[in-house]
Length: 206
Image (cartoon, rainbow, N blue to C red; front, top):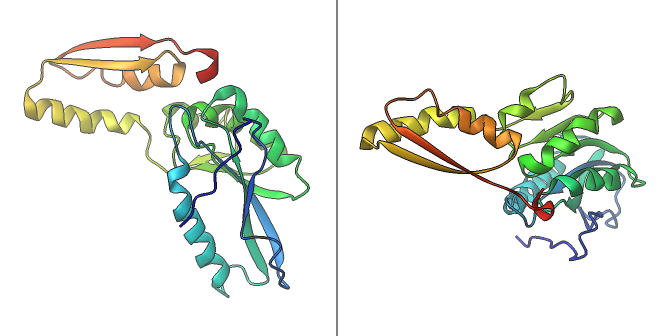
């Protein structure tokens, strides 16, 4: 499956629609905003082939959405905070009405979009962002995660640490709130020494 590539201008504009609306049929089109990261600290675009296959399966099933065809409108937020809301705005000012938002690919880009998407009365889901912060229902009112929270990973990691008898653990952590919450999960686990190095992020990566 060929993965569409975003333009290099960083505009956050919609650059791909699937299935192609030009293929005319008698069904009514339904659109959802798909926001992914093709670069930056986390690349979620590798999941696009699965989304394409899922759309083909849904649209070819006469019982799934009879009389409708489901499309995505795709944009790239580059896994950055400052492009996240611009990408969402570009999606929602598009002439095609969106019934939902999917993304934004990584936690850094998901949080700013999920804070405001409820103002358009649409649900937002993500299968990549897993920060425990995103479970705050007051702050992220119509956002839903489809992947386990990162805090559950701490217990699995502790099992590996205990099995190998490691005594010193070092974590390289970006200096933002969501990662600090994840790191704090490891502190109650004895009997090892935890070293945390916080990496300051430049504006380009925020």
